[in-house]
Image (cartoon, rainbow, N blue to C red; front, side, top):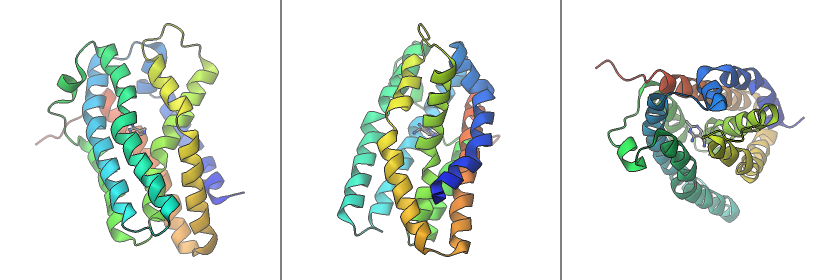
Length: 222
Ligand SMILES: Cc1ncc(CN)c(N)n1
């Protein structure tokens, strides 16, 4: 079993919990509150901006041209591609996307998640530590989308396109991230593998908290 297969198996209970939480159940029913979606979009727009910037930090750690090209493509996807999924949600809210995201902040759970990834980018020379903290971003959404589609016919659901986006767009990215992490895991120490594992699983928990934060529209009490 490859190292990333182990990580993904260990993440299963967390992903199942996210699936049953109120945010995803609201997506499935197509009746999630518009306030929850607004809050999610405000937070996620900023989260994705930071995600793209962190990819750019990793480029400086790389020598392999294929890896550099891959990160450049990912920056483009995060900045220009994923907004399509956001537009589906803005249509659901019935308001202009730019107006919805105005005034967003790094709300508590998203703040914690973003800083978790930055910490790894600045602490470790090898990009794999950060990649392990970033991989749940595509992985958790892909798994949720596939599970939703397996269990539900979303015909007529106003958020169907959001689910479809993550069901079809993540395969190549996950393949690349898995190969990257497995290559590093094969030659590194058990101690480093424990950090990689922890980074991956913590980010899965961050994903859960991000949805809960959006559902409850959490902000800073300051
Ligand atoms: C917080 C978060 N995690 C994951 C994704 C999916 N790339 C996202 N848009 N936002």
